[in-house]
Length: 439
Image 1 (cartoon, rainbow, N blue to C red):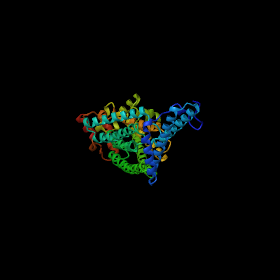
Image 2: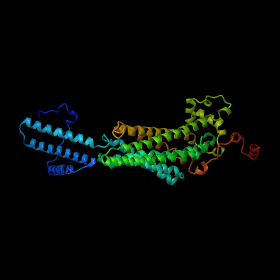
Image 3: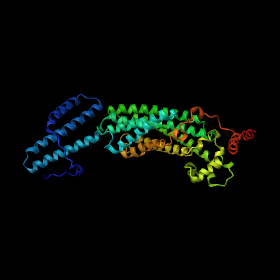
Image 4: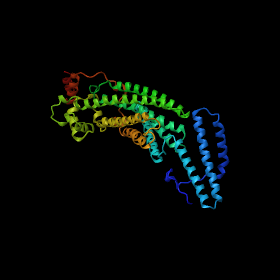
């Protein structure tokens, strides 16, 4: 055949010509006639778009069948070339139509989406198992809710392998993935309160449970706003109308969530700073670890060998003596760094979602899958996996439970009480020593 694609079409499709079975012609003709008749009276924007796509697809497919019939009997090379060009152009038009109908704006990566579906399923199963085996019910339930939504989101993406034009599959992935981090953070807020209880109220700006009360209230408000926006965007997409009002409503909910998380991170970093440097003026040791430097933060947070010695000999006397036995457990000193990493990763994901929503459903971020894989799924997966070894039952042991009543501490202890904490750690636990401490 002498014909080659013209410069107006990408040559990458020239070698992928596909045929349409001639037996489909009656059904295609009926579909075309029905769509042409219906479009005469259609008024809704969604109906007009849908019917126009049916017409375009049926016409292109019928053109391919017609050209196939010509090729079956053609003997002249010029006729064969012309018929082949019609097939190629029609196939290209069908490809363009499929791209236009693809809600995602790209072909979903099967391996990546299945991978994260499995990861989130495993994290979910782990937390369901822990709901039965441990008594940290608030933490377990919030993580179960969060990773149920993550699983459903990627289930929607995997189902879209079948049909990437199905709006229900798109919404199944979009809405749960948008809402999931709010539930996960609900569990993290309680972990913050636990850390405050373990080390001492004097290191916290707020009372321990206030973090849960305040930030969970913020998350609930954010979820309501995002849910309303998601519903509005869903209706708009189904009716082929402008989804911008719903998108901007969801954008407002996400921004509110990010603002709340920013405040939370400030409180958390302040807690970490106080935890390691609040009592430095009372420490006579001349050590680099007493100075607020990036190196000191890193060593103390990651519990390096030099930091272990420093904590045990110089910081431990100032911490809450009630939970001294907790701090002897191997994972407890690494608990703050686990929470820090998880919060930072979830925060990165939320920032990504803010930018994505601001760009809209046709923006660069939402139409390139690499971003949802790296800045969304990977961030949440890491946050979930961190709390497999750092689940509270592994950190504190199966027999120990820090309940809400344990976390509800009274106000900041006085300086005399803090001094008492220090003395109690340096004295023997005999009756005589206790009497001396009280005196």
